[in-house]
Length: 249
Image (cartoon, rainbow, N blue to C red; front, top):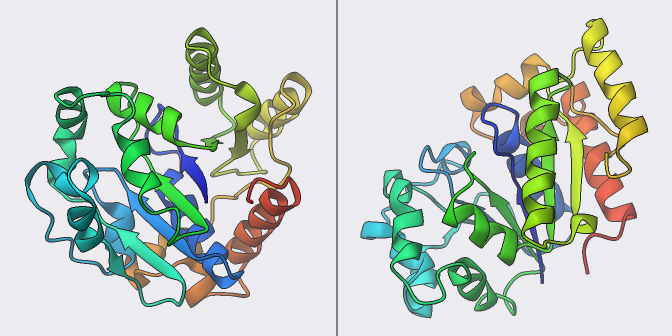
């Protein structure tokens, strides 16, 4: 089992849309996949038309195995399940903090699922707290969306510094460009500079396109409702690059 976290300590950078589309493409590629929605806004849950009905304090992630399994919902797509979120996830860091081995709780919960899934995709909220530390400890890979702007790059650099200071393996961290507008000179300049500065930036960016915004209308991955669109091709290219880098066992 491999755990891939779509994470950034900056909001509004395209984490959820990437998590939804990559999880879908993984399932379509034959990986038995679980999308774990950790964000209290529950956007990934919404995209897959799931009604969570979770217990208080997200007990599926901190309780016994049966509670976790009861929280998992099937999606409309073969091979893809959802561990949904609701607004109680706003207290998930507090719930973990009150538990023993507080920074390992998420990893312990997900290990119970290793026989059921080839891949777990985490859609993560934009914060650095004890929940984020759980995400870092539970994940085999962090995939970080970066808008090609100065502040977004700065946030990525801050994340790398935090991970290095806390002795996480930076080889397990990759960035990809998100919400790219190649008509903007700044975007082209920042992308060029990042490719020179960092060796862990994916080569296939995700452009800013109306098809991605329409996910909220259709409540489906782009590759499901518009498989021939430029947006679908972009996510497929990113997914192919992830597989080529042998990120999944």
